[in-house]
Length: 115
Length: 115
DNA sequence: ATCGTTTATCGCCGATGGACGATGACCGAA
DNA sequence: TTCGGTCATCGTCCATCGGCGATAAACGAT
Image (cartoon, rainbow over all chains, first blue to last red; front, side, top):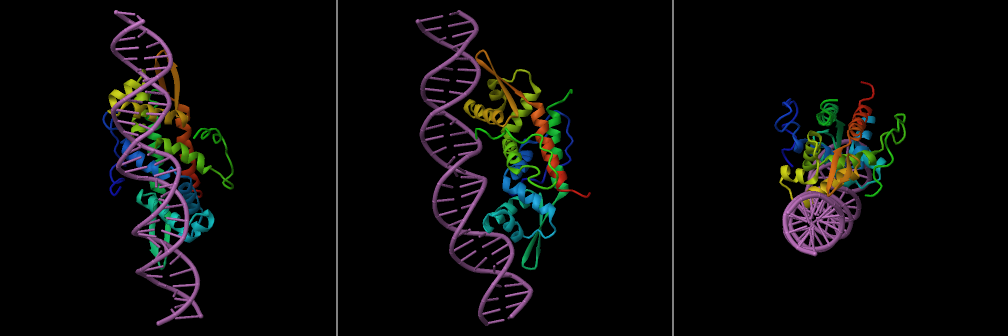
């Protein structure tokens, strides 16, 4: 859980071998496979504030729960974290998000080789 | 778990409202968020046989475990099932898979509105 | 009818996930 | 300093996941 995402990014292998790296993809999709975290991503991307409290207000989950979800998103590399005074600023890492989407697209395409 | 996927498919809402339907996306991504299931998808798409046994041979997991994963993929709508004699034919539903990918892309795009 | 193969399902169990409240740290304001 | 607000972490609880072996059903072949 500590070194999950630092490997597969630009590995353009031939369709042989480990190809898409199932574990890396699965790990990042797991971070996205919870409704609350999807909601959090949407709120983060729609707002500029992005502190934990604001997300708590909109989501009616306990503060500790939201903090936990944010931590998961940060550890997955999808959200960046920056301490700001007593706040915590969270911001969507759009590049990382795009990368996950691209990875999934690559997987789907590898499942539809000829056509 | 029985009625998870029959709702969100072509809902092209405006960027207001429930937009992307977090629950539906999360549910389908959850089906993809396991290395074994990614592997299974790749094997299914690369082969024509697609019976449970064949997957078991390549994956060194118990037959019951593979059957369970296949069930999850079928229930998520990503794999189609067709009983054939005493076999079970499994095939990737490429359209559904593409749809998931598109949904994720839509989510990512909704996180990058202006640029 | 009997055997072998394939498959789905059923417990069972350990591990993980997700939720919460409580707590303590940190910081700004009064 | 003291108070109020924000946040991360800890511990607990319960549900679900993921793995397995065992079993039974279905079917082809002998």
